[in-house]
Image (cartoon, rainbow, N blue to C red):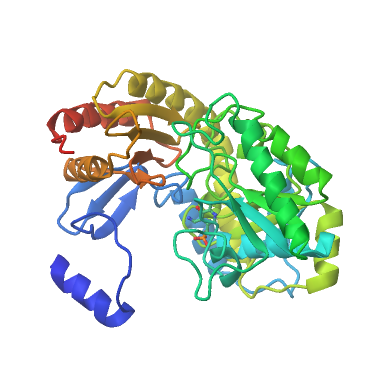
Length: 425
Ligand code: PMP
C-alpha cells in the first residue's frame, strides 16, 4: 500500500519528492491535536505548527465553507474581509506597522519583503544566516545554504554564521551577540565594497530552522544597531514564531525584544488554508507600492480572509496564547529532568522545543541516534522531527491546543524511547 503510493507519487510528481519518516505516514483525518492514518492508527501531532488552533477546527471550517458559499474573488474588487483582517492583525503589532499585503505563502511574503528593502534603500545587498530557510521562490531560495542555486549564490547575498548555543559564534555564549553583530557588520562592508550596497537583513526571531538555539532577550540588539546604522531594513520572518507560539508574546520579535521594519507571516495564520502576509510601516509600504505595484490573484481573497479571522477569534476565545505559555513551562520542566548520555541541551521558545544530542565533548552531532529516536516516537504514535545543522536536535512544535495531558503523554513516551533506542556511535 505504502509502496504503491510512493511509486504513484514518483510517477506523477517526479523524483526526490520529500516525505517524512522511514515509513511515510498516509494520513486521512485530523481533529484537534490528533491525526489518523489509513490503517486507523492514531497519532499525537507534536510537530504541526500550521494546524495552529487544532486540525479541522469547526469554527475555521465553518468560516471557510460559509464564505465559499457566498463569494470568492480577488482584491481588485472591494470586500470587507481583507480590510477587517488587516485591521485586526496589525492591532497585534507595534513599531508603527499598520499595513499589509496578503499572499498565499510565506515564501511570497519574504520575496516581497526583500523587494521592500530594495525599494526603500535603492540597494540590493541582503544578509541571512548560513543555516536557514525563508522559502522557495528564486529570490528567497538563494538565502538558503542547503541547496546552492545553479551558478552559485548571487553576489548580493551574504551569509553570517547562525547562532548556536553549543558552538557559539565567536567561541563563547556570553560574547555571541556581539560576535554575531560583528559578522553582520563585515558582511555589510563586503556588500558595499562589491557595489551592491546594503538593503537589509532577514531573521527568524527564534532561529527556528537554524536549530532553535538558546538566545536571551536582547540578543539581536547589537545586530539591529549595526543594520540601522548602515541604513538597512530589519525583516522579521515570523512564519514560525508568530501568532502566539512563543506564549509570552504574540510575536517572536517582541519575545526577543527588537523592532522590525517588516514582518512576514504564513503557516499558522489560517490553520492550513494557504495564506501569508507581509506587514510594514506606511513609509515602507509606500516605497514598495511606488516601485513595484503588486497584485496577487488569490492573496487576500474573502475566503482566505475569513479563515484568518476565524483563527484570531479562536485564539482569543480559547485563550491559546496563554495556554501555550502554561504548557511550555511544564514541558520545559519535564524536558530538563530528562537524563541521557547523549543529551547536551534542551531549549524552548513557548510551544516550540528542541533537545540536542551529541556524541562527545567536541559536540559531534548524534545525527543517527536522533533519527532513530524520531522513528521510535513515530512508532509509538507521536509525530515530531529533527532540526539543526547536524539534524541532531529533536524538534517538537505542536498545534497551540496541545494540553498539559498531551504534554505528559509525549514526555512519558520520550522517556521510554530514550531508554530503548540504542546508542550506537
Ligand atoms: N520562512 C520560514 C522561517 C519557514 O520556515 C518557511 C517554511 N518552512 C517559510 C518561510 C516559507 O513558507 P511557505 O512554505 O509558506 O512558502
